[in-house]
Image (cartoon, rainbow, N blue to C red; front, side, top):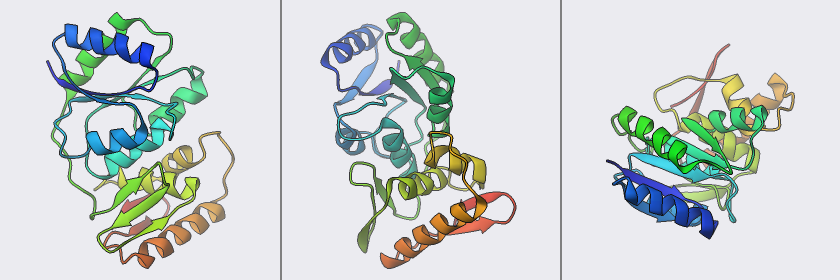
Length: 220
């Protein structure tokens, strides 16, 4: 059995999940909001699977997951949401989901999917350059300062920093930053990247973004 991080703001649904998970032998770390999830599910939390609601009262669960991944939390993620069409699911996967369950759900199915994700649990990651992304404030912090980001800037930075050591393709960054499926020109992408670099430089961030020509971006 594993340790499950549960972030769900609706009390009735949360009670069903907690009762079922405890009955299956799992230990739990519980959060009600995105801010609580950031405090409780960080890189040092011994979590095997994160169960994350998308429609949180203070933030988008997809942004919370990207922020957690950016600081080294590599637990697989199961999104719970009322948004069930194909586009919504693709947006969830672009944000770092490993699996996706639509409300109303069958508890037995959720437990089975958690068992599969628990079995896949790999080694833990590391903090990326000391950056901390805050999806509630749409800000990024380093040891020397904090700067506000627009929602689009936040999602682009989160998409890149959530995959340390990898080149993140442009289409992945676009899918995370423009989840409504908008067409985005290459010049627009590059303009946003320049703005993010400027903001990171303003807080003397040791972490930067390198463009891999013709492919995408990576943490530098």
